[in-house]
Image (cartoon, rainbow, N blue to C red; front, side, top):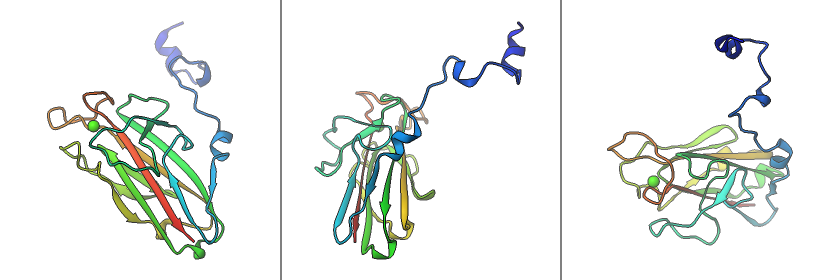
Length: 184
Ligand SMILES: [Ca+2]
């Protein structure tokens, strides 16, 4: 069979049979990880391996230390130049939320969405330490009653000499640390 015809044919092999297509974790694994925000309490949801596609990595000496969240990167590609992780959580009534903050640190820069709306959209930084001390952001306006989700994408900038992102390595480490604190 002509190779070009095979690639472009609408009657080609199903996606699942093509080489190079990675299988993702089934959806039910993701939905089983819904964290419940408790009433009349402070709920902390820190990055760890309960987050979808997160793998814990050693903390670099210049990354902010905390015992309420772990530094992570993408489990599907632990040495990739980018990582995507997510978490679902449930709030019974959003009007019961007294305060809600996101603490977010990343090497090198990242994008954070809560319920599909951008909370953080970083610009590439020439210094690897720019975002590694973390920032705290009020996210109360992004929450809703019922199921909520947070999606984080981290990127590992290669520096001004390269201009683009590079794989996570010893020479150029990469990591994500996030912590939601929701008071009800
Ligand atoms: Ca880096």
